[in-house]
Length: 278
Image 1 (cartoon, rainbow, N blue to C red):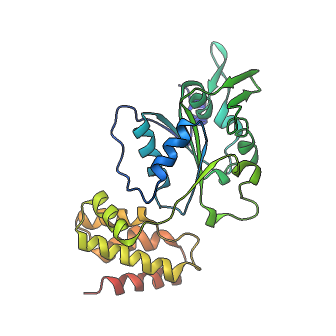
Image 2 (tube, rainbow, N blue to C red):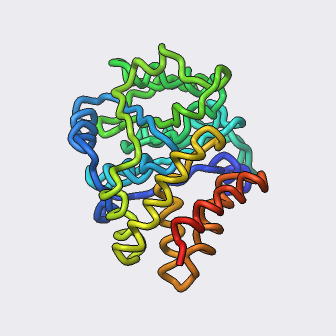
């Protein structure tokens, strides 16, 4: 694949899960069965929830559980419809067509997962409409092809509703085409179990990290763009498990990741000190 092709696939990861065991996932309610039912009924799924609450892990888990290839796209301001569908390229032999990740999933089957869909350009969501209703087709204007979705194709999108504003929202005409699953942070006991399982840390230390997270979420909810997710707790736990002092690990993996404002970082650090007081 040449450099131009690599540019098309920027921020796109493809994982074959058919022969691997599902990555660990702790269900909160009935999201596993709902996802399976949506897949078997050819219904697209929308996952809503805060950053770090397990949306991507859930999709990876379900893909492996169903034996499907996943095409994960991290959406951003420059992501266009062509990046998803594909485009013509030129090499020494002439012009040739390269399928984008959405087209690959539609053509061969698998889950196309568009993470943080509201970050993408508006023309990106428009192309999903024909795939997310009973037509299940992908018109490719540049080749004149109308591609019918493979029976094992599934469209999954996600976003953080708490991080939206008027310029970056999901239109009702798009949102109402999906089966919606709302994620949130797990209960303290379940979150501590997740942290312990993912890092190998002691149960007591996992509970302390969850206590810290709850304190940060309660006190900093109005001052931070994003409150600390379970992912940050796992990162801190892994540092601690490898020998890092707990307060230093929490500073590096949690508080410094939440803000660049010195006063706010200091305030968060004080909470860390209080939770991990000797």
